[in-house]
Image (cartoon, rainbow, N blue to C red; front, side, top):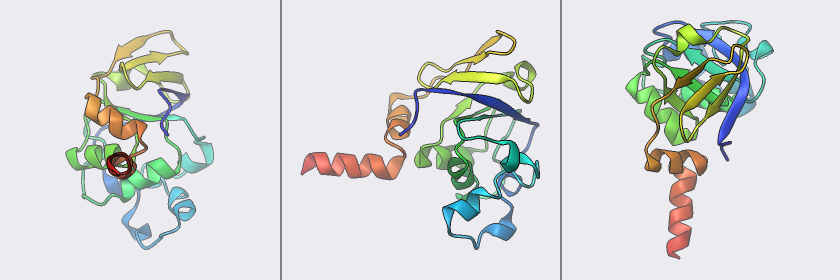
Length: 169
């Protein structure tokens, strides 16, 4: 289940971080989730996995997750335990894959100018309020629809559908 408030250290990336930088294609053969997690963000920052702790926050400029439609990019960020991903814009397919897998992704204008690598950041997933706890500066992400929040709080689209089907009996 997703936490309503994500809090962690910021890992900041620039514009146009594509799915192959998030999860290099040469690892698509891996099926064990622990093996997949070992390669998160490897194409953009080879030391990412050694420094990243579960719950930490990924911050990016524009077009985060552009590129292929493979779910692997979102899967690896879920596997590594990203508390939230904040970007000024996302690749459309990556964004929907992330939501469907239960990974909080929020569009936040100018966030890359307000957060530096290593800053402590908290994100209220429901309201979209982002606080840089290091500087005290705040930002407002675009709030998600109630339906998208329901997918996230259910842990993804599949758990949501299973829950709804079970309720119907």
